[in-house]
Structures are given as C-alpha cells and as structure tokens.
View 1 (cartoon, rainbow, N blue to C red):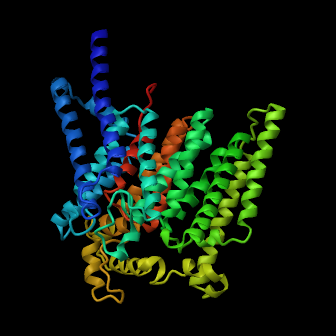
View 2: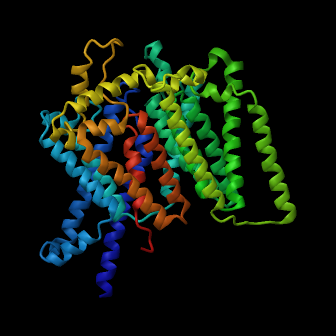
View 3: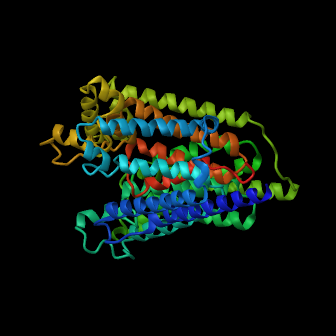
Length: 518
C-alpha cells in the first residue's frame, strides 16, 4: 500500500513539474517573446501559446497512458459519478461555456472561420480549447506555489520598464525604427498596441499592489513597493484610457480587504499617495521634457490638472509619516477594526455607482451633457465615444437583434463578428475596418450568444468567489484574483487577444489550484 502511495506521489510530482514549466513558459515567456518586432507579434505569440499548450497536453497524455494504462479497465459508474461530484462551480461553468462555443462553431455559417478565428483576432474555437485546457490542467493537476505569482510579476516589471523607456522615445529594442511615424506612439514594449499593453499592465499592477498591501516582511515590502511604483509609471505612460478602468477597480475594491485593521488602512493610504505622486511626477516630466516624451492627452489630464493635487499628495504623506511615528512611539502593532469600515466603504461604492448611472442617464437621455464640462466626452455614449467604440457597439447590437432565436442563444460563431461588421459598416464615415467589438462581453454575446456570455461571466465570478472563500488568508491568491478582476473590468472596452489573454487564464487556473494541504 505504501509503495502504491509513493508511486502516486511520484506521478503527481512529475505532472506538477510539467505544469510549473508551462506556467513559466506562458506567464513569463509569452509577454516577453517576440520575433519580427511588431509586424507579426499577434501571430507569433498565438503560435507560441498554442505550441506550448499542445506540447504540455501531449506530455501529460502520453505520461498518463504509460503510467496508468489499467485506468480504463478499472473505470466504473461509481468512479465516473465521483469524478462528476468533484466538479466545482467554475469547472461546470467553463465546461458549459466550451460546450456552447463548440455548438456555436458547428452550427455557424462559417465553420472554418469559427474554428480558427482567422477572420478576426484568432480567438476561434481552437484557441478557446487551449484556454479551457490551460484552466483545467492548472486548477486540477497543479499545486499552488506563491513563487509562480512572483515569476509572472518579474516578467511584468520587465515589460513595464521597456514601456517606460518607450514613453521617453528611447526605443531600446529598436522596434519602432521601421514603423510609420503616426504609428510609433500607439505601440510599445513587447506587447504591441497600447490598449493591449495597459490591459496586461493592469494585471501586473494589481498583483504588485495587493502583494505590497499585505506583505509584512520589510525587505519584501520594499521590493513590492518599488514594483508598484514602476507599475504605476508604466500604466499611465501607456497612454490609454483603458488603464483607468483597471485602476478604478483596484482602488475601489481593495479597501474591502484592507480596512479591517490599522496596517491595511495605512497601506491603502500609501498606495493612493504613491499613485497621485506618480501622476504629479509624470505631469512635471511632460512639462519640462516637451518633445522628448510622447505626452498624454487623455483622462490623465483630469487628475493632473486638479488644482489641489500637490496639496493632497502632501497631506497623504504627512498622514502616513505621523501615523508611522505615532505607532513606533506607542509600540502599537495590529489594531483590528472589524468590518465596520469595510461596510462603510461598500456603501460609498454603491452610492458612487448609482451616481454614475444617473449622470450617464442625465447625459444620454435627458440631454444635459453640457453641464458636465470636460467630462462630457466620457459620458455621452454616441458614435464618437471611445474612439468610435460607440459606433461599433451600436452596429454590433443591431446585428444581434436581427439574429434568429438560435443564434441569439448560441451566437454566430467564435470570432465571426468581423464578418458581420465588415458587411454592415462598409463605406463607414470613418474609413476604418471594424473586425472586433472592442468589448469582450459584447463580442461574446454576438459570437457565442447569451448562453455563452452568461456561462463565461458566471465562470469568472465563481472563480473569484471560490478563491476568496477557500484561500482568503493567502494574499498571493488574492493578488491573482485582483489580476482577474482588473482584466475583467477593462475588458468592457477592450478585446480578447492571444498576446495577453493566456496570462489571464493562467491567473484563473492559479486562483483555482489546490494547495498542498488539500
């Protein structure tokens, strides 16, 4: 019996090693690897991810066959029933999502295009299969190790530093030299388009901010603070408004975890003070360096131009300094506040959310847009909104409402929105080609239908809920969950790409993976 148990341990160890290598190859390798500058970055990263996933799966299958050849002989109804009972809610929802994506592909008018995604950004059923395999393998067969979150963070910091250097027009990698002048500012680091870049950096900023907020070891706290500082500079210098959705989610939800004690509250003030300090520094850089930097003309200016910003920053740092000095003199450690402050913050978030909804309603339905001044361009949801996202969304929804009931339920086929939009928006007033909704959830509604969309959202929510329920005491898991949240929020105005989305699925797997003691 002991010998059988040892054999099983050795088998599990080999599988975990293979998956650990896979996590490094995707979580670290994918963001950094490039071949021909930005010219084939999407295709090359797509092939890299698919190749790694196929090799990983092949090794696991061959190993399972060689070591468990008698498994098929011992298969019984009881074991099948036990396997089904072990499925978690995230497992159930992701399998439903995959089933709907498969049905949508089979019943699509464009089966080939749905499978490969070649008429869009490559997220066809083939790539979706890779994502589901990534999640299931990591969540079911791997054992959580906090150092792998650090590995993903290290790669992210390298990407951040390269992005910051691009903001200063240094072009260290030499990627921009052969590009057209009007394209140089919208591609950066080893990721490419600035919207994709800031979506990825949003996950990295979430990881490092959470780790800094919860870490108690002095050396590691300083390290995570430096990483957070770099991340704040990088995400703002990415020059994409998408970044502020990620930051808003991070700053809005983090207090629900930190406001339970004095250390958490103080760390949050440091986070906010650091962010505003970075905003002020970038504003000074833009003023004094002129044409030597790309410059920012976006939501950033709403914060940077705030009259009392410098005073606010000074007050924040004074509060932190006095607080540290007071606790050092009084020799105070952790003071528990309970959940009172968390509930108060939650109430403020709900009030803010309702207020935003009312303002949007006031602008778009009561035509009171003028009274909101500089904010009007962000609040009026017309065709011009979000670099023509309003136009894309309106046309996409018009396509959806014309679907027969079957396609409303299961969609038109993965990555086929481009086929529909190209037909509908031919000769559009912007002279642009629209092949994506630039909203992941709207994209899913069109391509895999309302059932596919609901199952996908349910999957993400269930991963977050289960991870927080089981591993809320492990702040590395909490960091991964915040990375998931920040990606999911910015996905409202962004698109799913194999350049960074595989990292998102890696985090989903990590947040769901079993710990060694389970």
